[in-house]
Length: 331
Ligand code: 13P
Image (tube, rainbow, N blue to C red; front, side):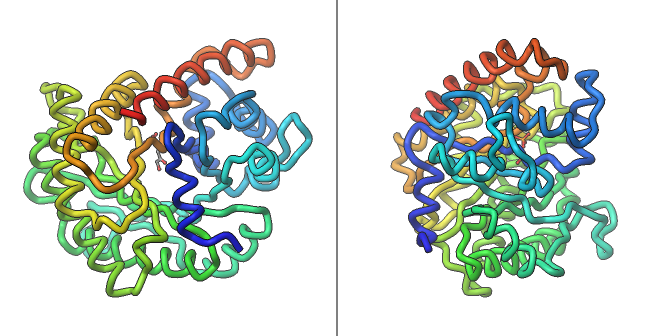
């Protein structure tokens, strides 16, 4: 069995990053409908194949996070998607959380489920060739009132239980406590919440004896809320994000990847470039790269429209964005 550190290092190899292609069926249906594409299982297979079947992605992608339905589907190359990725040197990963629900102790906030039956599911996923996993928790900011300390702590506790199980199954857990962009908050407030969320997470991971050197952190950038009139410059985002990470993330963590969180493809690219540049200046100890869903797929979906004849131009748009994001990850 490949050891956790080697998998984690492969995921953050220089110039490479992750494609998050793990939209749940519900989210995939909604996302594709917003481009006028109606979906059943076959259309979702074509949607995945549009990206995973693009020639040359292995130059820019170290890994792809898949959704359960995709594990059992085949690309146009007639190979199961995880096999097809492995054959091209791309690590296949799997989203293992089962989505969010209201947190009973603070019903305006969300808690992530999926721990029941997790060991059995992990054993089944590993047989398909997956080498890493993802669990997403959601942290909402509302002025100075949310997030509550309780919601941060319970989400951290579940992330830690998940991480422990995944490491025991020989896979690398990606820990994604997503601090949402929605809201009117300032960038300073986002930075404060990031620090509290990540500090709590790493202290709870220690309590659960999770090996820090065998996890990948997936985080949001420190950004002013989307509903605020203020726009951050990439330099401001970079400064706040790196300050938060330096304060809250242990140096043993082998890599940090960013989600795009509703930024446009261009914003997500420019902000990543500024962050990796700042990280070098500050001698940040971890490799930093992307793990985007929307920012990597948006432009391609807009031209694909679910039609076979548009596949070449959609794939060209995807490759163009991938090259730019890969360049940004090099700083
Ligand atoms: P976005 O890049 O669209 O935020 O998605 C990343 C992700 O994996 C969310 O769970």
